[in-house]
Length: 152
Picture 1 (cartoon, rainbow, N blue to C red):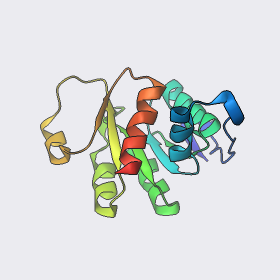
Picture 2 (picture 1 turned 90 degrees about the vertical axis):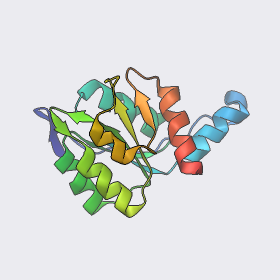
Picture 3 (picture 1 turned 120 degrees about the vertical axis):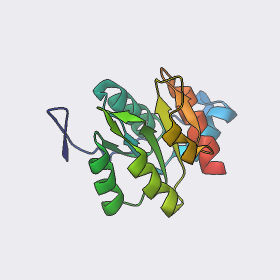
């Protein structure tokens, strides 16, 4: 549990299986299987984006999603929970997510940056091999990016 922009956030461990049978194409089934039961850290300070990621990845794809609204909250999550993959907003209320990126890199945990900024900062050069998802993004592009990182 943590405070997210003045709102109390409770982690949602509920896992919902995707539809069965003919409801999913083979590509959709592969996407669901790739993300299902993975633990995903999301560092995002925009409440609606964080909630959409939690809903889609958790409820639709069956992932365990931990939301952090500050870099320190993300670091706390990394100390308490095993994480398979992460999505990091670059700018968190004026604070950089790079300290979290360094910890993820040191632990060999794949991650991607999500940013609304066109020009990459010089600090991002240290993470030149990390995928960058441009905002605004679609949920299908998030899942595709996660799928690519998990397979790699």
